[in-house]
Length: 273
View 1 (cartoon, helix red, strand yellow):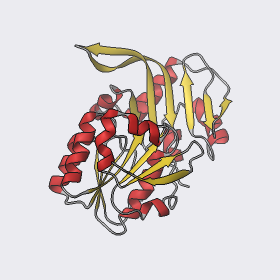
View 2 (cartoon, rainbow, N blue to C red):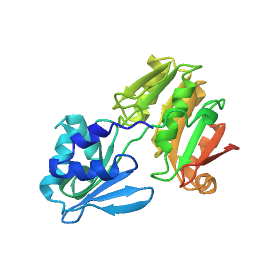
View 3 (cartoon, rainbow, N blue to C red):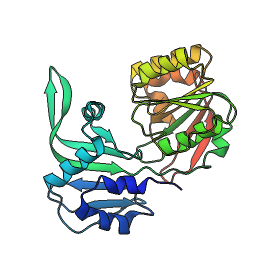
View 4 (spheres, rainbow, N blue to C red):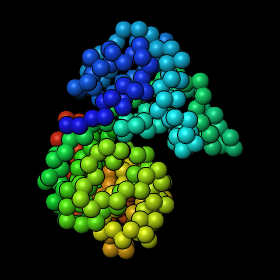
């Protein structure tokens, strides 16, 4: 297991670092901070409250340290998250600013949820040798991105892989990308998939979290060009996935469905039209 732990500690206020380091270095999955309440570490589904009370200054400190005041980070914050160095993902809650019906950003933060990125090389050997296109299904926190990362590394042993890493979470700086992997970072999936097709001549394209009809259309276009896809999608079961109209056409794109479980185990089944 690998984790950019020092990068995580680097975005935390100094008064919080020691307790997080002592209590969470080996097992922490999330750090949750709520204005006026004790910091909470989540480890294997269990909650541990740390000493102290979270202030607004601490919330702002983390966001500023994670974003480094970059315009790109500000744009992703409008979607409710930031990606910190090391691939750690920060969910944001607070007063939402809207203009003409579009979310512009979040001000007066009240909560942060930091999902701690941990890499497990070698966990996807069986899934990584599956031929054709692979769809990974699971609920938030079940390990979709972790499994996707290792599947793509395995695929890159035998074919050219291009990864559209919209949030810099799949292959943040410092992680092994594999033998034949090119990464397009910070680009929306719908545009990135088409850019990869036109410029990198991949045999396989990897993307995280297909969520919208636009994402599905880009995936279909890539499949129609003869490219394999490895992707993730939100869902608790294959049955519920197949009932969602927006994903119906994807059943003809993917050859294999890898369904994750809460304990991070998974099973595979063939996709059928």
